[in-house]
Every structure is written in C-alpha cells, then in structure tokens.
Amino acid sequence: MSEIAEIIDTLEGRLKKLLQKTDALEQTSKALQQELNKAATVIQNQSKEIEALKSQYDTLKITSSLLGSDENKRETKLKINSLIREIDYCIAQLAD
Image (cartoon, rainbow, N blue to C red; front, side):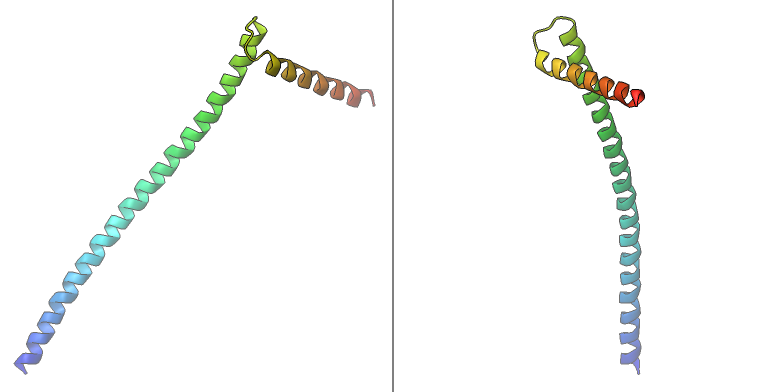
C-alpha cells in the first residue's frame, strides 16, 4: 500500500505543478492579450493621424501651387477643374 501512496503523492505533486504552470500561462496570456489590444489601439490612432497628415500635405501642395510654385501645378489644375465640374453639376441639379 505504501507504494500506491507514494505514487499518489507523486501524482498529486505533479498535478499541483501542472496547475501552477497552467495558471501562470493563463496570466501571461491575459497580459499579452492586453498588450496586443493596446498595440492595436496605437496602430489605429497612428493610421488616423497618417491620413490626416496626408490630407494636410495635399492641401499644402495645392496652396503652394496656387501661390506661384511651379511644382504640382498640373495636380492643382486638375483639382480646380474637378471642383469646377462639381460646381457645374450642382448648378445643373439646381436648375432642374
């Protein structure tokens, strides 16, 4: 019977260690999940900031062209023509 008791004790010890390792892994998993969520939020915020900066850059390019810069004149002309077409379309819609 003592052999069985030793085996049971050994088994209980191993189970306790296994449960401790499982708990530690669960805690690590939760911490990593929280870190991942924070990183995803940061990435989302940075993406929004990048889009805003791109928009500002485009606006600055157009403004620079309108102020006499030779760079980006073609893009500025195309943008102006696009705006004129939109205005003409709106006027046509109002006339109907």
